[in-house]
Length: 107
Image (tube, rainbow, N blue to C red; front, side, top):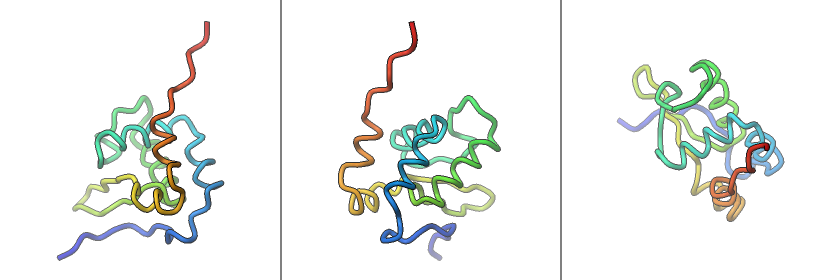
């Protein structure tokens, strides 16, 4: 039996403006960076400073814009970056985003 995945946009329909707008949110950017490190995670397992329901919402936004894939595993919904897909569609974009140095904190 194969994995069951939640719906996500086809690679050809993913728009760079939509991806950048989604990742511009600080919580979603942190999720993307964490998923880059851990490879796959559920909203409850990600170390985030917001409620699990908020993480779940943000993962849904990231999935709907094509940044992550989410599979069904019993009651869990682990998500992972669509790294290879995004690399084919927008070469270097995701690597640049996850490796960019965050801005320095205020004074």
